[in-house]
Image 1 (cartoon, rainbow, N blue to C red):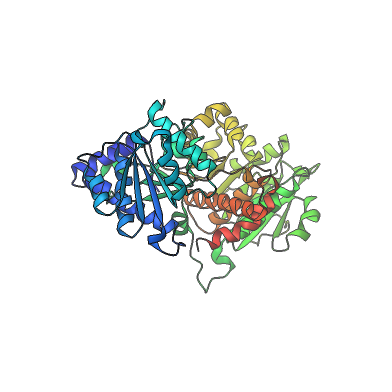
Image 2: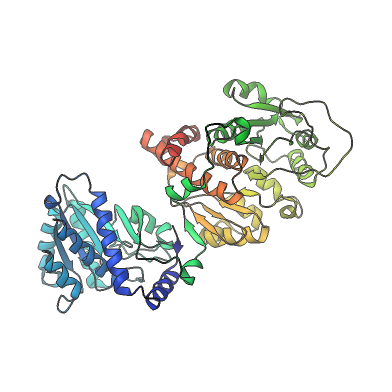
Length: 543
């Protein structure tokens, strides 16, 4: 799904109109597709003639889309009512079309005390909010605010409120900034036209928009302004198209080897979560490279893994572990560095030595327990595709010229605090402009950036971004980042590109968080292990 600013969407519509896809045609297409989305949402109802739709219809294009949808619903047997807000009924072809289809027209200006509105809302199965569109800017005009506030109050007091569907956006939301008037009617679903508007993925608008659905307005693919949009919002269809095939004649080598260097005595579980997530994403083999004391604690919990025991100092990875790890990279098809590392200087030296290639050449033997060194001849180390997470990012920031040392494109997975360490920006600066910050530094560093948090942003060095349209407190828990990093390295090990693996991993992770929440019922109770256990269900939804 494309993710656009209001100006970008306006430019697309202008070019489409000039190219022959007129505004009237776009409105007819949008209204028909809106009606089909409503029918799909209420598909469980027994008969169309028993259903009632109420549309709050404003003076602009959103009101026009709503009138078209109501006419389509009336033709299907629905009882359709339009409640006009600041829109004149006379000489309005769309109003006439609705009346011809058997719909009713009512004027807000003639509804003293909103008695009609209350009876219509209480009788409706679905309420279409089409008062204001994407061009709205605060403040909200008083007369329109009164209607929205009345509808909001009636809905809150209704014993059986209708399904609320916002048309393109909830009325009173700024579709660039995400700011919203107090009178905005919270939607159960927002059916947005052609593309997701950026403000709908910002607070407070995201809390008012409900579930997002995108419907078409006509063919746009050939338009230069449409092609110029480099931002997307991920959905199930997109992610399903990214995942690698799993042929019936496959063997474990088909799906690659994920090597995960992780853990320290204080953060034992990080390696376990990342390793299991890599397997759950479909990797053929997962090897955990951990400080040697962690093996006894972890091995019994993870019989599917193979192990590489690293030299340590008091339970954290030692500087000379780079040589050991370097000798065992030969069969790794992706490498994750960082979960549970800790911030000791010895681990920073390990990371620096590994990236600078100060190791012996890879051994020809299989990955497993530490084996005797191979040839003493040193040579430049060739690192497999990299994913760097958690403490690995904070240590990375202490290494001079670190971006140039990474095999591009690596995948970096910072949360806002780690992004602040990497960039020198404050967390507030990052959070105020998440998408542009991720894009800027992905291009500067030449790496894929996964800026975690509510509505995780994935940015590629070529300027593309994908936002995960999911925000949930269920994912605000220690360890969930280790699960995400494991998913990404597992997908990367299977041969997926860096950007594609990051997008797919982030979507699967976020969806798994929602499924874990559905199972447990309270976001306070969702643990990282619950998110991990929900990964198969998230994959089952799209494969």
